[in-house]
Length: 158
Image 1 (cartoon, rainbow, N blue to C red):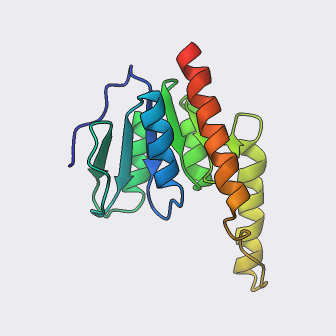
Image 2: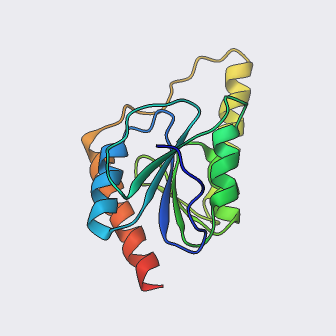
Image 3: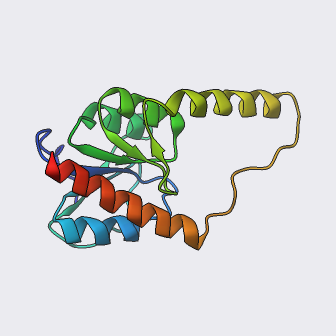
């Protein structure tokens, strides 16, 4: 189901669905808190049939999903993404932003994350062989569940 953007005044979860390994965890926490989830991607894929879950399919243009999410991000949104540049845009819009591992992106941490990303890109461009991120582990899943739950509780309390 593709729908219009969620009302910007309502608490909601926006998911950058590309390669997101915690979609099932997002659904479980969202259902427990009765918070709507919008899955954003540039292609159709399965989502649970549930009144709190909807899908937005954007064009396949470069950063189309990121642009849609960034436009919807505000103080009532929890954004789930591993994309540091999208996280930066959403943090600046006032959203609560979590990586797939549960690590929060904040105004205090985003600058360092962007700098590290730039350094790694420079090293790769220079031909250096560097490792990628650590494999996604059970501990990451657990940390994510706790972080998302805590973020929703905090935003509900105002």
